[in-house]
Amino acid sequence: MAKFMAVHTLPMTEQQFMVMGKEMMSKIPKGFTYKLTYCAFDQQKFFCEWDAPSKEALEQGFKSMKMPFDAVYPVKMYDAASGKWS
Image 1 (cartoon, rainbow, N blue to C red):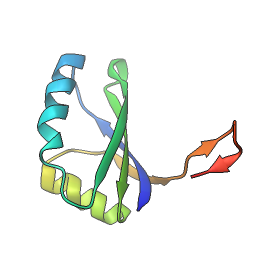
Image 2 (cartoon, rainbow, N blue to C red):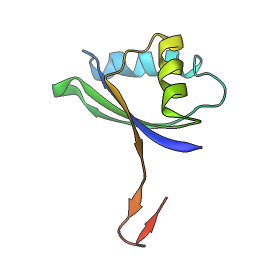
Image 3 (tube, rainbow, N blue to C red):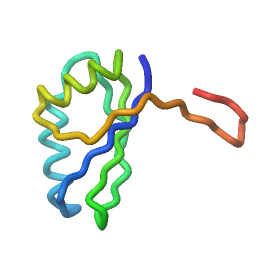
């Protein structure tokens, strides 16, 4: 599975985000793995890490979940301490 960073713009408070997050967990299509979200509430931006078969599949998954998104980026993670990519 490939790694992706999805960018969302959503006008939400921390409490609203927590409620929405719980609701969305039950709607994740098979074949996708949600990892974590970095939140910038003051900018209304959310950066979510996913494992998915492809960018196109993840975008379709968001559409089926009715989750708005700005962009989806294929990403790699670099660990500077070990010097390894994953």
